[in-house]
Image 1 (tube, rainbow, N blue to C red):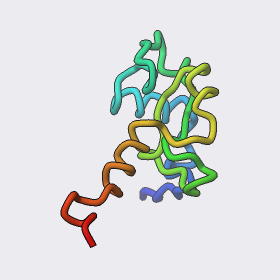
Image 2: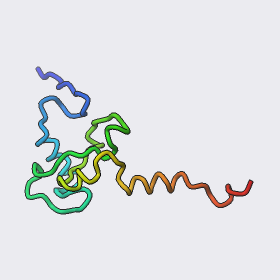
Image 3: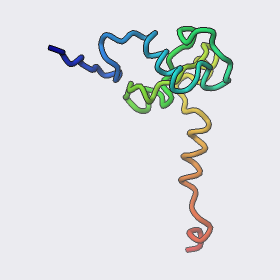
Image 4: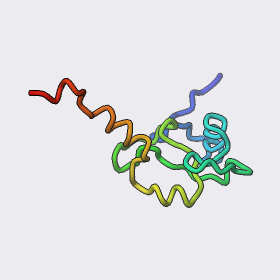
Length: 101
């Protein structure tokens, strides 16, 4: 008889530790800082960073986490990462034909 493990708001199961989530992220993205690409000897050396800051989008699902070194995580703080800002701005830019009224 197997019980389903309850998922809590971070998106991982209650029995999953931060270390296990770091290992899953390392398998997904590589065992390096997402921002500066410096490799980690052990994924547990990385910090968990919300790619889209929690203050902007209240989700703690695994797809919103990346591994980051402490200096990069501190530098990013509660801001959107520049690649995401560029994509959002590029999508919001009107086409040349739309400028003429």
